[in-house]
Length: 252
Image (cartoon, rainbow, N blue to C red; front, side, top):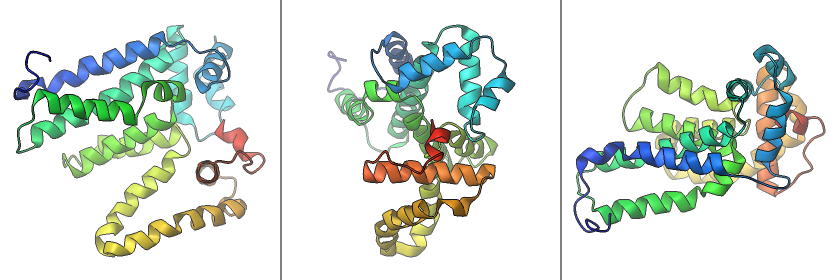
């Protein structure tokens, strides 16, 4: 890197995302936290699941976190709770760096080694390792949807895998459905033009309205999924923790 800093970035370096992903995963594996963090809570949960079957873990969930429950089951089989942050970091930084290198290869202009390093640093600061590894589910689910969108719009891979990647994150974190709805709204952007700014301005109003009428969603699987998403979106929007009683239990 130092010796070739201002030289052209080699085209055959596209697979550099693989070692980057494993370096991030190793950092995740080595992370030890003290105190009330998401990761420590998941460690306790995994230890509680020791010896449990997949069916039992699914029954303990809320019915909408199927991806998370299946993921936790396979981590439990390894007998090592540190595989949870390992896999999360591997997935997040693997997908992000893959997209970066794929974009570089697709670009008509040439990139220097310095410019590629700058792009990677920007990505690193946007999705800082500690918050990603500690958070485990939320950003991971967003990145998967972003990757599905990239496959869909840039790589033109409109196949079954792409559609599955759109669906999987909903079972990983309930707020992912909001990101998926934004993806669907992208289809309307071309038709609305600048009018999309009005829609964006009204999003907080819609979230507040549905939060105040949360019972409209009912108690079905789809209803609970939307309820969880609205509650999480409202909490993030208002930096609040006073979500509707009973719903936050499902989120956790």
